[in-house]
Length: 466
Image (cartoon, rainbow, N blue to C red; front, top):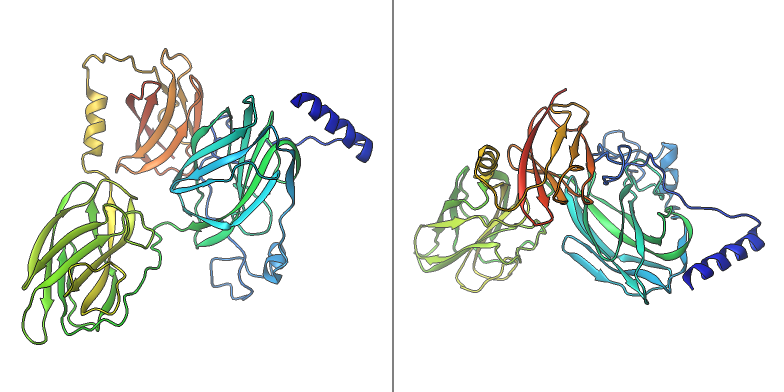
């Protein structure tokens, strides 16, 4: 029935237009995939975007005298139209990107969800789930995702096709967010098409297309946070000492931003923080709370983000452990001292004081040790591990991860730096050869973790030369 509908639509198009067009994906487009060498370019350099109209040549944007930015600066940008002719048999049922989750259900072939904003961190790997909906039989669906990185009103520029893959059923995968130098709010287009990949514009036969808004955040971005207001600073935070932060701040009238002061904290490691109150009329019991914004969303509402909850009437030293969750990199630490035991991080109109600092969250301390032990072990492993060959190794341009001769299927390949930072995270289809571009890798050694069909990891290493 589905095929006959397709040919009927095709004949009708010929009668009306006198010609037919086929939407094919370009083999030279850069996106996060493991299908071909041309499609394996993983990292894109920072993208310049259009300015707000000031021709000053002093910012990181393209000014309005650039021809590509004329429409942006005049406010006349409009995106090309697209829709599915038939979304009865299959449609986009649900998408998930990190913590964002939206179940749209069967729409109208094209749905504009631009009122929904999805925050994506620059130079990060996004965990992705794409779920199709079916009226009956399941089909292999071909998914494409574009992001307008330079805000020029199209998805035609290099690197803007950020993801492409196909599967029969729910697809769980990941893609990489290219580097940006400023916060960007822009358009994202998600397309699901039966039988072949679609273009970003125009009509497709079977499937569905949805548009969203994404906010791309630069590396080490610290979001704006609430500022507690109208605090009565009769008592105040006199000093905060934690690792490299050693601040005798004194009275700051209820709130102070000391985010220029920074210290490094390691995941799953224990630290001490010394907190000293200041008094106007003599000491009394004070309640202390310290939050670390582990997911870097500016809200301090995460399950493990409250790391200190204590009381004292004098200086106090508390130990805390940095939870092994959240994001690696810089984020905010908030210290609150008050007369009340139940304050929230954004409470206002209370007697006390609030101070903000910056912490740089580092990976697990034992990460490299664990990998080195795995690489050097000679013990017998009961569960067979996949046979993996890395070549050329060392290399300067690319490296192939060859699992084609393995008896065990491979699911995931993850690359780590020697500091434990995740560089790449790729889904692998069974026993294939995956090409990883190294053009933007720094010189040095890297670890590669392979996860097989039994969810067992094996470890390998390679070197990058220039």
